[in-house]
Image (cartoon, rainbow, N blue to C red; front, side):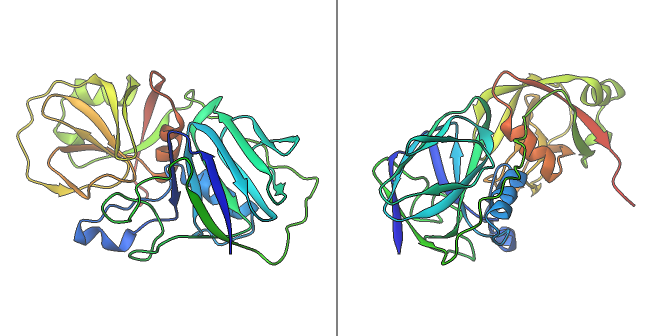
Length: 286
């Protein structure tokens, strides 16, 4: 068993896998990666199961030292990556030697990155998942000075010349979204605003939800608590719009206007406060 030591842990670094989808009936949030596509790419490049755990890193600024030779890869948000005396790119397999330090700068693009290792991270598995979530796992985050244990793979991955191009997060393309149960209760003007309006991400955001700055004034009646999911766009009684994320509750008492598919959740999570975007309403497949 080997370990890496987090000299600097950044704002929020956790261990995430695909979460706990089987326990929503018990009130347990899904958890898992904010940007699932980047998470899956990290495991794919490491030739591992899609369900294997990765480090999820928010906004960068990490330094870690490995006590054993291994290979890692970083996907998602991009920043300056260095290991030893060399620089590396996002989506590039990085050979790490014993006692070498891997440094990740603050991100230039995006907000969430994923570090996969050629091997397995060793942490507590609760309800079939290693995903951190306060009050379910012992830890809610990793802190500076902590150690993360892992089991390195027996065989190294060949360092090929072929590269996977880094994806650039952009708000120029509208986010696909499906109409939620309460969409039809809105007036034609309110529906048009959701279809054609521009929305701004506020600074009020975390792994539970992202608040939007624009409001939709309404006089819809109160409603009883109903199931909600990551990607549900809620309309509060004050007119605020909240997009639920991976650590959100499993029920809510606000109207459900839209539902974002997984890819839209990942794209939205990589946009920064103050950035603007639009929804693209889609019909559900038959």
